[in-house]
Length: 444
Image (tube, rainbow, N blue to C red):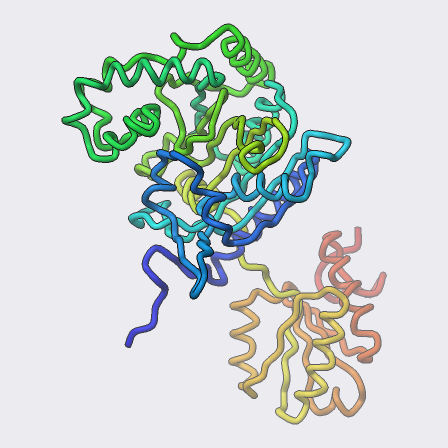
């Protein structure tokens, strides 16, 4: 049997994982300055957290990994998205009672959907997302979008645009649904099976169809803006004014409805226009939701959020030639001249690590030449050489790679000497004694 990762999943190996670490670190920095707090919810939830009533989304109807517990009626589902779980947690822990609403939350973690794997779309994928719950204000919609837009701009991404639309309030949306049912009633028999299901469950979902998007009925579909009441028009106008004020460019897309049924008012997608992205061009997307807090038996409260695919973000950066995190170089390599000094060498390495230096040593009793090849590959800045003489005398020989400067010091003085070498390197100075420079550099 050949053992390999399941289809639609991937291993993230050293050399690649550094990109993820860099992104995650920056995510936390941005959320910190925006005063968003991290939340972590279970990787699976009760199925009814995601499967709510007459939901027409493909995620609920075709893509969830659902399993029944043995000898139990309990049905659980691996989380396909995070909003529902976050809102469930918000209600369960009564965060709606906090004095300083809205609750501003963010998450980073894996999601699971059973769909056809392709570039930028895996069955286990990772998302960075935010949820702002408890206050309904168009300025929060603007702030939410601004956080994501600022984050991706900080990475240097340029080939992006914001697509935005409004689904209005319940009254506006109900009027639009009726208009869509009337529009599609003479065409639905010739449309795909999913559209026929959506026609009965939620005709707005038809606008998101990839199979029938070029059919004649789609070309003359009614526009949501014609069914917005005054309140919904005013709300959307304030959102657009806020984006204008912050200098965030956008395009209004009348057909944008997003893939989940709980959205109301503002919906948006930030997409890459780089051809290398292919069909999976959405980098992050989301919208406002009313009614979801109430579904989980909380008070009547609104929320807004978005999710950003980490895999797609990395692809977008690579498409634009942006370098993310790289594997860190070694600060020091402890090089042994004899197998008998292994324990002494490990003690020296442990001291280095305890003082914050990234350090490695040889465990294979290799030749000096082989160890130096490792020094080169790992780009160590300093070599700590230990032979039988050093071990007997309680000393180490320190060699700086950049200029071959070498000095033998007591083991107890090793950290002080390496600190001095690194400080001098950062200051572009030599580390020789004043007036006795032997390295060819000069003191500043």
